[in-house]
Image 1: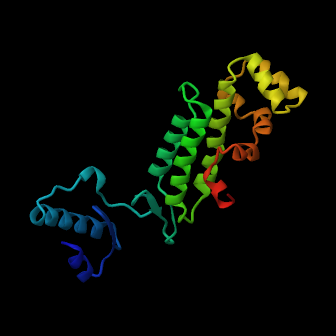
Image 2: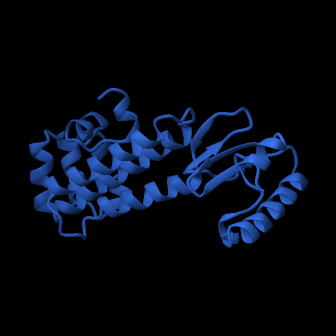
Image 3: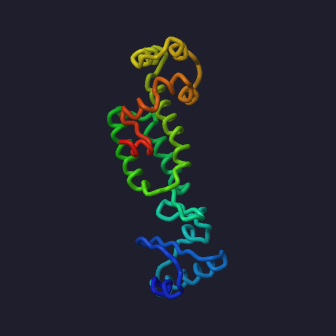
Amino acid sequence: MGPTALEQRGLSFCRYADDVVIFVGSERSGERILESLTTWIAKRLKLRVNVNKSGVNRPWDGKFLGFRITSDGRIGPAQASLDKLKAQVRRHWDAQTSVKLEERVLSWQRYIRGWWNYFSICQLWRSVKVLESWMRRHMRKYFWQRWHNRKGRLNALRRLKAKPYHLKQASGSVGAWRNAYSPMLQTVLNNARLKRWGLWVPSDFATL
């Protein structure tokens, strides 16, 4: 059952390279089409369909080329795409890796700009907006760890014009991840400053 057969049946589908999504009216129809298409590919093309990447789903539960489609036809990043984005955030802002800050920022900019260029056609951004605060928290955590110790943190906070009551927090024993969410770091390393330093998140590209 090739593209012509799908068209003759009046089925709506979208294909890109070897990825294809077919839209039908019911789960039963979907299972029937999947079975027919799998058989056709095996007989006519002598290829085996990857059963781990094939299946019958509601559009908003599945993914196609990294996107999900809602019941009203709007598109957004699929959960798997958001999971990959989170993995890249952890990789780029891991203070344990010996990469210069300038190189780290440039690498992040290249990645997040490419991500935005690909997903900017989306209409659903709520899940990304929620994720952005988590992304910035990882960035703040990176700086807190990079400042190493009490002396380094005090010096860094003074350079950033931190208030006296914020300086007291540099001596605390609270962990880096918790400090990254503190009012102190959210004030000293606020969203505007992170953006000015080039530590962008997806929504920043709407105003860059």
